[in-house]
Image (cartoon, rainbow, N blue to C red; front, top):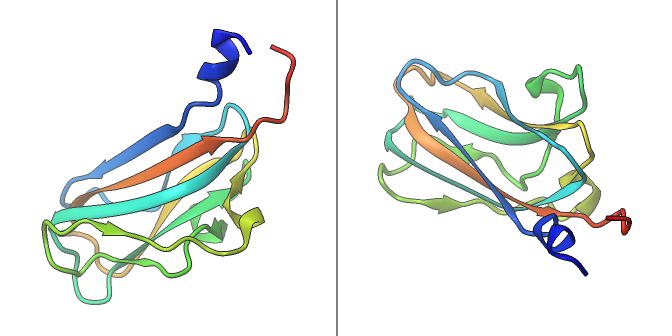
Length: 133
């Protein structure tokens, strides 16, 4: 396996930073190849209002974040204790964690996120579907 092939199999780490007043449903990554979501973490220094949540979803091209397929077993609570990293449990449905080329990873917020200030991290593992490098 050549160096180029090895590089295409390295994990990809995404970090979406949100400052107060800017959190909104938004795509954070468009896939250049097939990936599987391996981990989702969140931490914040300013919590959202009561019952504020974020969901990490996979959406095909042209699909709004709110209509994407969740990769989480349960959404991230953004009203939890500040400065306390949370690792989310992923869905056990493997196909819901697979991101096809040209699909997007998006964040879908619910509740009042106007005060929320934090970061959501997603780790992707490339899915090797092409052996021609």
